[in-house]
Structure formats: C-alpha cells, structure tokens
Image 1 (cartoon, helix red, strand yellow):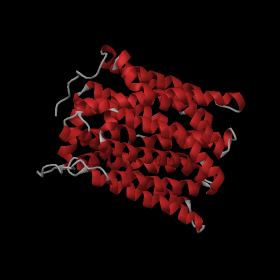
Image 2 (image 1 turned 180 degrees about the vertical axis):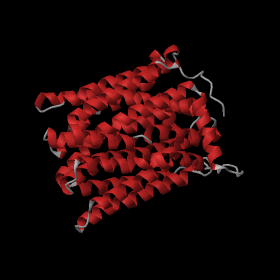
Image 3 (image 1 turned 90 degrees about the vertical axis):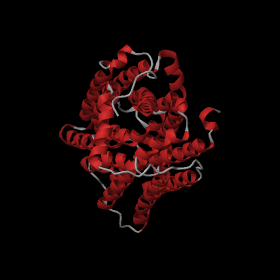
Image 4 (image 1 turned 30 degrees about the vertical axis):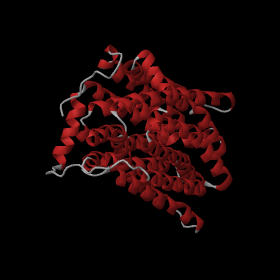
Length: 410
C-alpha cells in the first residue's frame, strides 16, 4: 500500500479528498450564483475571485511564521469548521431571500482567510506524518485527490446547480468541510508543540525568505508559479462568464465540459511518480511548465459545437502539466527546507504564487470589460506560456533529478 499503509496519513488523505471535492463545487457554484441569481457583471464576478485570494497577499508571510509556532492539527480542524460555518450562511440567506453580493463577497473573503491557514498548515503537517523518502509518494497521493476532485467536481457541481440551484451546491460544500474536520480529529500521531523561544515576526519571515532566495531552483519554481498564476487567475476570473454568456452553455454543460477537460489532472496524479523515475524529476518539472504554457494557447479558440474540443484539449494538457509541477515542486520544497522553517518557506512560496491571484483577477475583469472575454483569454494564454522561460533558463535544465540539490542558507 505504500504511504497509504500509514494509518494517520490515510486519515489526512481522506480529509483532503473531502475538502478538495467541496472546493471544486465552490469554484463553479459561486460565480454561477453571482451571475444567474444576483445578476453580477463580469467585473463583479472577478471581485469574488479577488476577495477569495487577497488574504494570501496580505497574510501569507505572517501565517507561515505563526504555523511554525503552533501545533498544525488543531489549526487545520478549526479552519475546516470555520469554512463550513461561513459557507452555510449562503444557502440560509438564499432560503430567506436576503442573499446579496456584499454577503457573498464577505463569505468568500472569510473562506479565503481560513484557507491561507489551512493550506500552509497542511503542507507543514505532511512531513510530520511520513518519512522523508515517502514525501514524493505522499504528495502524489494528495495531488491525485486534487485531480479526482478536478475531474468529478465540476460535473457534480454543474448537476447540483442545474437541478437544485447554486445555494444547494454550496450547502454540499459546507458539509464537505465538516467531513474533513472529522477525519482530521481521528489522526493519532502526537502533535508536538514547537519549543517556546523568543519570537520576532519580521525576523522569522526573513529566515523563510532567505531559504527561498538562497536556492536557485526553489526560487525559479516559485517565480514561475507567481508569473503563471497571475495570468492563470486572469483566465479563471472570466472563463465561466465566457462559457455562460459568450458560448451560451448551461450550468450543467459547463460542469460537464470542466469534467472532460480536467481528466489530465487525474492522469497526472496517477503517472507523475513514474514519469519522474523514467525521465528524471528535474526534467519532468521544467517540461511540465512548457506543456502547461502551450496548452493555454488552445483556450481562446473555444466556440460552439466541435470548437468545444479546444477547451477539452487545453484543459487536459494544462491540468496534466500543473499536477506534475505541484508534485515535484512541493516534494523538492519539503526536502530542502529545514523542518523548523518549513511553515515559513511554505508561506513564502504560497504568497508568491497565490498573492498575485487577486491582482490577476482584477486584471482579468478589467481586460474583459475593455476588450471582451475572448481577447482576455488570449492575453492570459500568452502570459502563461512566457512564464515557462523561467524554468527553462534555470539550473533545472542541467539536472536529471532533484534529490541531491542542497538547501539554501537557513
């Protein structure tokens, strides 16, 4: 069974699976609720994406330092419970006919804040449950969860939205977070609190920054993630509106299209480790970045009828590339970062990659307002492809594997 033979990791894996499915429902249900029920404009929809990701820009570095001071498991449980409570207010408000865009924005912002704590704490927790040699397998298993949710989530969300409405889909999202918290409560590995010592927040953040800056490969991975994330978020801010209003697809059809296009993520989750063993982890990493950028060039050609195949093909190769990037990028980060600094290193990379998302969302909304959604998809595709040059020009090109690369200064 490999890493799944570890009972506590298996519980973490099941909690993550539930959370990933809920998040995928959220990705489709929130913009569809804003568009169909609240009559939101394309720029207002982009504001929702901005509100969800703005906490990474504002809080990411601080949360990393805090996560290195506290036990991660209670933090993860509290974040899940808080997200469930916030999301549950949306279907309740809709039931009584008082739901408005301001409430939806506040809920999305609150979920985003708790998501920062959960994501950084989650990646800090994995190395405490499995030995170092099993980290690539553990991360591949977690990325497979992401892949399965990416494949099944949009279709499930679209079906629920089509049949029962977007508020009901968000109620299912809230239940998924409760399910995740219950599995995390069953983890038995002792959750040791770090030794108390004098703390200075800015100094602690600086220690994490020096680890990332001091390792050229880790810096290249983070920089590529930041630039590609900027343009990917511009794409995501408008693509649901593009499919709904420009192409004329129903909620169910959008969900089904998303399911078909994201099968590449599931394929990558199942094959990434074997790919790394066959051609080398470093080669798999930078080539996945190139594949990711090339795949985005197909999105703007999406249209009615057979032209929908462009969206499916783009989604397959883009999600395959991003999962391979995630598996080997996160494994490398967990290997080179000193254990006592892992929370801060995670927060630095998360802040670089996700901190730009609200800027990209605003960029996408502004570009779509000025030039239209299809032109915005073209600009975003060009930016994602250009970001691959960061990996191609990095020391990764001269390596086959990542295991022997030394860490930067602690």
